[in-house]
Image 1 (cartoon, rainbow, N blue to C red):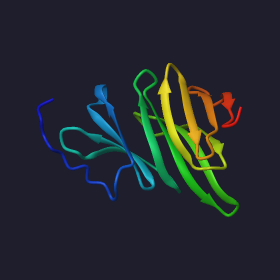
Image 2 (cartoon, helix red, strand yellow):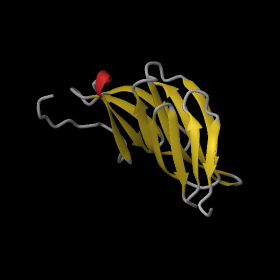
Image 3 (spheres, one colour):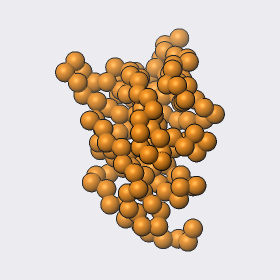
Image 4 (cartoon, helix red, strand yellow):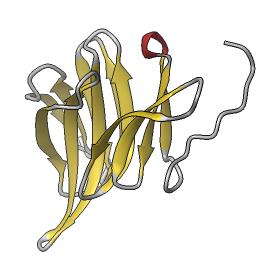
Length: 140
C-alpha cells in the first residue's frame, strides 16, 4: 500500500482497529457497532450494530469471521458479551455471555478466543462453536 491518509468516517472514536489484509480493510470497534472499512476510500463495507458499546473487535482470516466484545447495560447490571459474525455477510454465528463484568481484553489465535474481564477472570472459547473450553479465575 502506498502511504496515504484515510478518513474512517465514523460517528465516534474507535476503541480498537484490526487490519484485514485479504479484504484490504480495517475492522474498527466503535460506539454501538463493529465496522469493516475499505482501505482505499475509508468507506464502510460492512457494519454490525449492537445495543451496547463495542470494546474490542478482531478479524480471523482463516475463519473469515469477526469477533466482538460488547459492554451491555441491562436492568440487572453490566453484561460482557462475546459475539461471532460472518465477515462477508455480517450474519451472526453465535453470541455468549462472557462475564457479568466489562470485557477488557480479547485475542484470537488457532481457532480459539481468549477474553478477560475487569475482575481478572479469563476464558478460552472455541471460535467455531462459541463453547467455553477453559476458565481461569483471577485468583488461583
